[in-house]
Length: 91
Image (cartoon, rainbow, N blue to C red; front, top):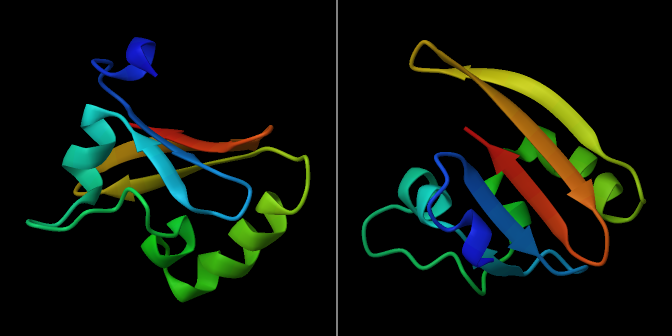
């Protein structure tokens, strides 16, 4: 994942069961609370309850999902896809 390490958008890679196996620097910066280690945890736990069912369905299919959110006045594109691993990419 070297090629994603310094980009200015977050990349989180999970295995087929939702276990977080890699996060780039931006993903660590925007997702971790102080002292928290997300790598090795489950990506499902990072989402609000309402989004969990959709994420589980996405993980069980070969589909991609893209949507936008707004946080602190900044619009962000969320792109989720699944191959042999699932990746969330956003800024």
